[in-house]
Length: 47
Image 1: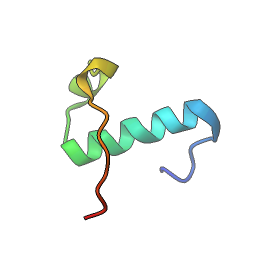
Image 2: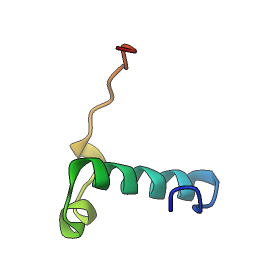
Image 3: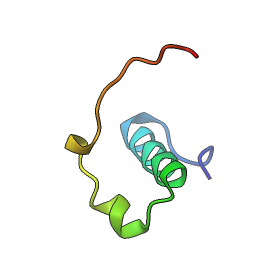
Image 4: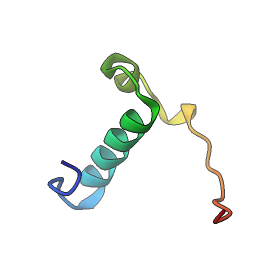
């Protein structure tokens, strides 16, 4: 499903929503209510 998404910003947004929703096992209503402020930007240490 991820590979079938279009390129560009819309595809990137949709890809992120699907992966976050899957990884967090969110219900669709919780994922739809998610806002940018709910996320924090962090640096990956490569562990």
